[in-house]
Image (cartoon, rainbow, N blue to C red):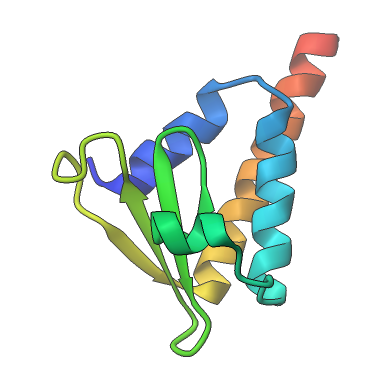
Length: 104
């Protein structure tokens, strides 16, 4: 397993609605670089979930996903912005389908 698969598991296995907001914010950050914050400078990540840190390199248009709990447990995963947007949109769709299945 690598950090991408671990990230997907974290997003799909947690039914907390904050994950939906987190994923929507990721999509927005891919399209437009957010204003850097002190928290980002301290952590080294553009965005963080409970288990993963995400670095967005706006010059090379690459995203690095890091498992931050035990840094060497999973290999970092690097993907370009377009591919990461597809992954995030897919996660949003899957989470929406999971909610609909629970409601019916």
